[in-house]
Structure formats: structure tokens, C-alpha cells
Image (cartoon, rainbow, N blue to C red; front, side):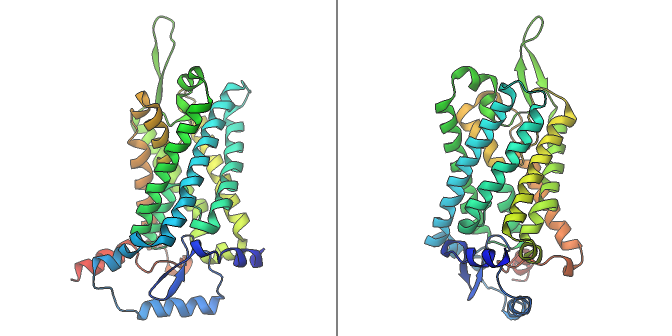
Length: 329
């Protein structure tokens, strides 16, 4: 399996050059341990960049390879939104005894497949949560992250539009187009009532679930030692399983109708909100602020643990290094 991983990760769009080194959006290098040590030493010896553009990787804004790689993020996120929102709707529409369990299993399988499809081209993010965390840690530049997140939001909107085109208006209204909701308006004994969870509870669930997602699964993809030892298929399958488990837990622990579980993907939530609108905008900020806080917490965690326990190879400037370089000018 390791040999297959090494061969597949040399696709043109999955790598880019900065200061003569080749890096990948997800930390899955093919070099031997001694070669990785040499690369790390070379980066340490490189002089600090003198411009903000070097720190942020602004040259990538004009890189055709980066924009071509972002196409995989756009298509992957579009398929993700269409598939996941369809799964959410069908899981509850089929009237099964355990819709949350069925939904979580199908989500796990879908995410693993899509990550495997997009990983060789763009690194397989299809989620602003992963992309922003990768930029903070220093695996990709903030410029590449901005391009990816733009592509992901555009793809999520296209996916929601595709779903709207194939479902009838009754299902669209009943299930909010499979979007991210904290509350919904449901029929009551005398008049319509609002059911769901509060904003504070939703924010805490987003923060906790997003952090656990990064810590328990994406960590393996960022750390080149684990990624190389386990292999791409196993690592990305674990990512899918963790997402499914977190969706199941967050949707079940609240026991509240109108709440379909933690979003953990701001682009997916945005796509449905732009297309469907209405109450999907109520508390929509939670699905952005929660994952952002989780990314910052995850980044701080990687900085606080002993350095020998986290080895990420990629873009040479993480957030603290950028701030430090700017403060020295």
C-alpha cells in the first residue's frame, strides 16, 4: 500500500514549488525519513522572507497549478453537498427506526470515497475547516487556502442548486434542502412551534465536534509519519468514519427535532443557505465561528505538545512564524 501511495501522490496538481522544495496540501510525502530530516534542516537554514507576499504565498494567487487543483475542491465539494444533503433527506424520509445511524454510516462512506477521489489532485480537503487548519499549521499557504475555500463555497452552492433541481418543493421545504439548522418551525397542537436547540448549545457542539474531528482524524493526514505508515486509503477512511461518528453523536445526544447534527463544514452550510434561504440563515454564523475556534484550538495544541510528536511537511511558514516575521520588521 505504501508503494501505491508514493506513486499516486506525484500527480502534477498535488504538488507545487516554493523555494525549490516540493510540498503537498496534505502531509503525505514519499521521501525516506533521512531525506525528510534533510529537508527540515534546509528549511531551517533558509533566510526569513522579507516581504508579506513571501510569508503569505501571494505568488500562488497567480499559479495555474493552484487554480487547477482548486477545481477538484469545487467539484468534490459540489458532489459532497449533493450527496450529503440527499442522505440527510432520505434517512428521515424512509421512516427507519434509527435514521441517525443510517445517515452517519452513509456519510462516512461518502466522505471517504470523495476524499480518495480528490486527494491526488488538491490534497482532498473539500472543507474550509480542513483548509484553514492546514494553513494555520503551515502545510499550505494562506493564499492557497483562500483559493480553496472560495472554490469550496462555489462548489457547495452548485451542489445545493443541483439538489434543488431534483427534489420536489414539499421535500425541499420539509427538510430545508438538507441544510444546517439549529431550529425549524414545526406544526403544533394549536399553532406552529419552533423546535431545535439554542444558539449557545449549537456553538459548543460545533466547536467540540470540529476539534475532535481535527484531533482524531485529520491529524493523521497532517502528520507525514502516520500518513505514510498507515497509507492513504486507511487514513482517509478513518477521516470518513470519524465524521460519521460525530454526526451521529451530535444528532443523538441532543434528542432535538430540527437539528441534524454538527455541520463541521461551513461551505456545505453556506450552499444550502444561499439556495434555500429563509430560516437557514438563523444562527448560520454558528457554523462558521465554531469551526474557526476549533481550528485555532487545534493549532495551539500542535504548538504546545512536544515537537517530536508532530511532524508536518509542507509550506514553511505557519501562523506564529508569519506573525513573528512581521513583528521583527
